[in-house]
Picture: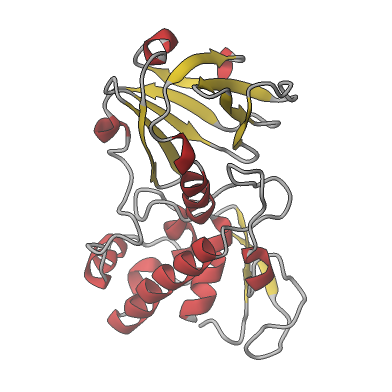
Length: 267
């Protein structure tokens, strides 16, 4: 599933559509629409004034004070293509732009969704802070972990605690912080929370610099893969040597999610 670094990369790759006018919009499968605050026709004639991100959501902001909000699910892609190109299989939305360009949403497994939203503040009200926001400090993280008795791994996956972290980056963050994924979130001391906070910012920043992680499906708006998969320390590396101590990376299930970790380096 595309997580924060992948969605941020897609957002940046879609920068060329800012300033373009929407000349047409087709939803080819109605079951991908999660919410519809306005009719599709209301978007036609509007200018795209920004492309932003909130957690794992991509937001296309229109001049008519409306927004197209896309969640990519497991296999979703937003691609920029020439309008003359044939519509590929599993394409569920097509945004026609001036200059004979399209933005097309593809999703073979259809776990993603699209929302036509007026008030994004309300739409995102349940999300936690952005991990790279300067206002998100160790103290705020400590406050959010204080009353959480669950293991730290599923707590990091809770989008109401910190927005945008998924399974890949939770494993990488906990390895970088030297914390065992089964540790109780509320049990972490001040020093450990400080390490965790630093690891969140470090891992997410490096992953964005590498344009995200591609195993199979993820591509940016130019249909290009990410490169962070070559830098993964533990995720997907069960049985391979830990990059720090050389012992085999372990695998277990915590909170219903497959979890990779080093039993030596993470306490």
